[in-house]
Image (cartoon, rainbow, N blue to C red; front, side, top):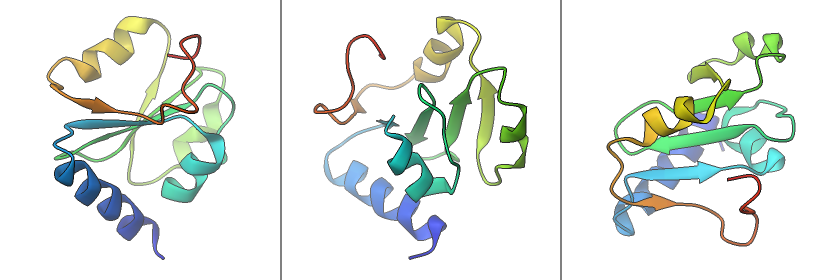
Length: 102
């Protein structure tokens, strides 16, 4: 399955469950959806009407190679909160996302 269709399938599920935004934090899942071999702590955010957003450490300069995503170097929590500002409902993997990571 092509990466673009994988994102579309998640967005279809988001629509079914009335989610505006979805967090993906598992390294394997980030690779599956966008082809990026993520480091621990990277976050992929899907908004229903936008391109995916990838949050990475400022130390990961090779993330510039990732195509089809908005890349944000996460320096402070406000960077993440800014992207969630208009989200009414947010989905995440409740069995993987620890409070520490969130």
